[in-house]
Length: 181
Image (cartoon, rainbow, N blue to C red; front, side, top):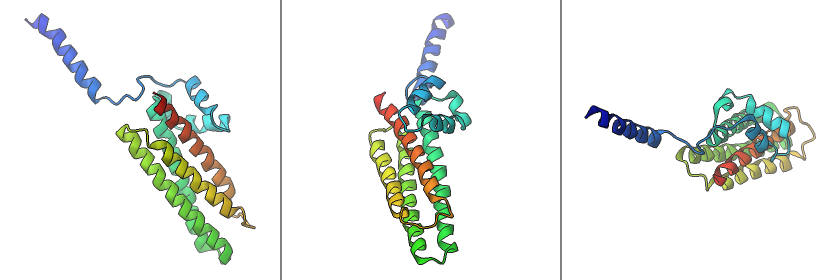
């Protein structure tokens, strides 16, 4: 009786484990797969370098890569947001102060969008992610537009906006990849 019961127990345990193990695509992404996704951005090398800078990408599936990209974008957005807020307090130029405040508001909204994306990834519901990515991208475009009129860039916001735009494009390609699966 134990001989017949053993395969049944094994199958039951396997089914239980498969039902609680999160698998978005069922396979780990290779370096080639990551490079292929990065080829869909405007900076293949920068994308690959950023993604590979995170140790989680050594053994990650498509959903995990999307989560890594959101984390990287969130970290950059939070740092830039903090810099903008401290720049508001550090400048006496009212025009520049207003620009910093507007960009800070844009980054605050982009951070909110990234949090929503992260939540969708955790829930495994990917259909709303593209609109959140688009919203975050629009926020940074607004900041770039407003900041374009700044005569001084002591805080290097233009560069930080470019870096964030790359990260948003990475979030876009990694999340678009999920919607294909």
